[in-house]
Length: 523
Image 1: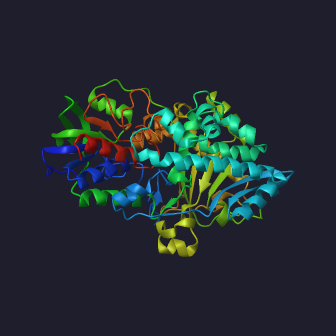
Image 2 (image 1 turned 90 degrees about the horizontal axis):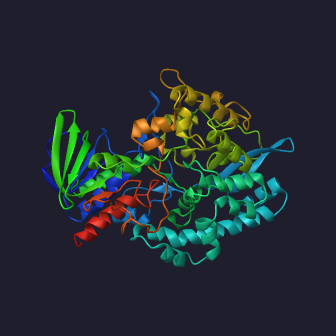
Image 3 (image 1 turned 180 degrees about the horizontal axis):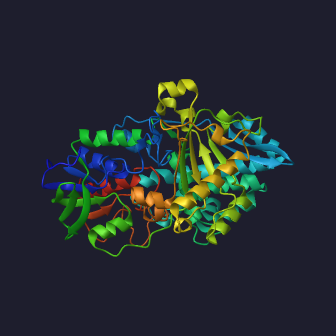
C-alpha cells in the first residue's frame, strides 16, 4: 500500500525493508498469527529482486538486478504456498575461444554425450571431461549434504564437516584456496576459467586469496537446491517478490511502502521504530524488529558503529535485442550458446590478469563477463509482439570491476568499461552486437549498465556489494547466534543478505529470522 496512517501503533514484529527476505519473514510470522508491519522506503516492495520495464515504450519486463534462482529452498515455496515457478536451462554454459587460428568453444549441456564431445573437440581427449565429472560429482555430494542445513539452526564447524562426510571435499572447499583444486584437477586454461568463475561472482579475489572469500563464494554457487543448478524465474524475478507480497498480505501482514525507517530504539524486550514518509515522521512499537537491510544500515538505525563495507566488484548490464547475434563458431547455435551462461574473457589466465590490473587501480584490458538470455527459457517477460518478431533479452554480469575504479568519475568509467566489455563479446561474434540492439520509443539503444556505485545509490548496497558483505561460512562462529540472524540487541534481528547464510535470492535469512522469533515465543 502507499504511504498512509492506517496501520496500528504496535505490532508483534516490525520488518524494516520489503525486499524478498523481509517479505519471507513477514509471511511466516503473519501465517503464525503474529501482527506484522513491513516498512519499505521505496514506492514498491521487492528490493533487488524486481522486474521493471527499463526501456521507454518497450514491452519488456526485465529482472533488473537479481536475475537467476538457485538458493531459494523449495521448502519456503511450499510453506508459503507461493504461486511461483522456475524453469531449468538445458544448456549450462558456452565459452568461446580461438584455438590454432580458428573459432571454437566449450558447450556444457544438452546431455552427457554432447558435453563429452564438446570437451574432446576443445581439448583433444577425454581427460578434462573425466576430471570435470569427478569434480562436480564431489560438489554435488557436498550440495546434497549442506543445502538442507540452511534452514536449520546453525551447525558447528565440526557438525557440518561430519555431515559432509568427505575429507577431500572439505579440504578443497573449506581449507585450501580453490585455485589449488582447479590447477590440480584441470589442465586446460579455458576449462580452469569456467570452473573458477563461480568463485568470483560479485567477489573481488584471486584464485589463491588466503582469506578464502573466493571459496565461500564458490560454495554458495554450487550448493543451491542440493544440485547447484541455476534456474530461470518464470515471469522474471519480480514474480517471486510479487508472490511473496501477496502471501504476506493474505496472511494479514501490513505492507507500508513510502515508509523509511530512520531509527530503532530498544531495551532488548520492546522497541520503537521511527519512520519518515512524505507527510512527516511517525513511530510504531514492536516486540521484535527484523531488519532486511545491510549490516551498515542496521548499525545506523540502532546507533551502533557501522562495520566497514565490503567492496562490490561487478558490472550489471541489461539489453534487449532484435535478434540474437551470429557466432564466429558456426558449429554452435546462438539459441543454445546464450541459453546458458556465455563466458567472455574468462580463461583462467585472463581472470588472473584482470584481477591483477584491477587490484593495481586500472580497468581490466579484457574485462571478463558472463551473459545469458532469459527470454529463450521464459518468453513471458516479453510482450506478444516482441516474441513474434524474435526479440530477445541479454543479461551481462561483469567481474573484477571493484567500486574503487569508479570513484574518479562513475559515468565516464562506466561508459569506458561497457565499451571494452562489449568489444570482448564482439570478438566472438560474426556481427557486431550493436547491429542487434533494439531501440526504445525515443530511438535510443536498449541497453543500461549499473556499476557498484550505481547499485549503492539505487539500492543502498554498501560499496555496491550484492551480498551486503563478504559471504560467510554456513556454520556457527563466535557471535553468530543460533540462527545466524541475531544482533547484540536481543529483540533486533538481521534478516537481510548480510546475515550468516545470506546472499543471493534465497529467502533463507528471512526464514531463519522468523524461526528465531517463533522459537523464542514458543511457537
